[in-house]
Image 1 (spheres, helix red, strand yellow):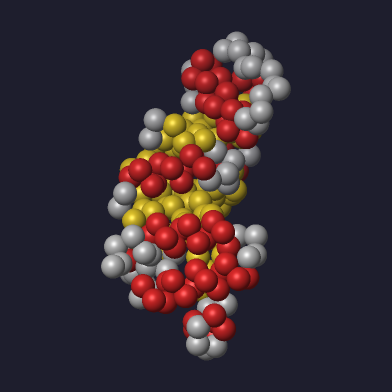
Image 2: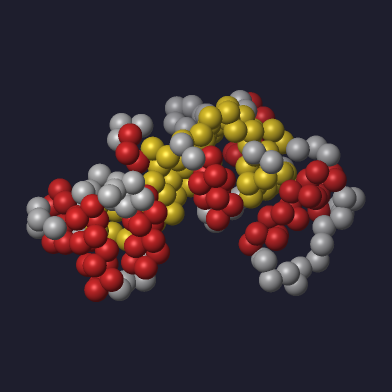
Length: 199
């Protein structure tokens, strides 16, 4: 990563983000262009799980070549240029992103498939009110469940770490005053990552 100040090595933060992120992009090898597709997913036991059809481009490519990458992003506040200098280069988007490389495996065991799908339901329908899956449900024969085994990971958090303490404090005041939908949680992000080591 070119900007070392945004490179976060804390595995706890990586795991926390993967549990909270709701949407990711899977990229699989294809010719002449790589194939990227958005998926809902669950992170469990150091792997990513998602589902799909037992046919189609995603399934066939995963069968041909298991090597793939995966990314997810959470957008925080946009920082306009006029908050500081007015020059266009001062504008910035704050965010958390993860990039993973690894291998895809199409799960065969019905009990394991059912367990992964159950975890997906718990994540996206945490209020419950859904029928629980059973290991021998006919639906499982028609549903592909993919396991993405992570080989390497990179977590990037851009939250004003490049700012001086005074600039970070000023930015927080401007975000408080603006009070846009993402500003409150961006303030907490700045406090956690941009101000924690500044005296």
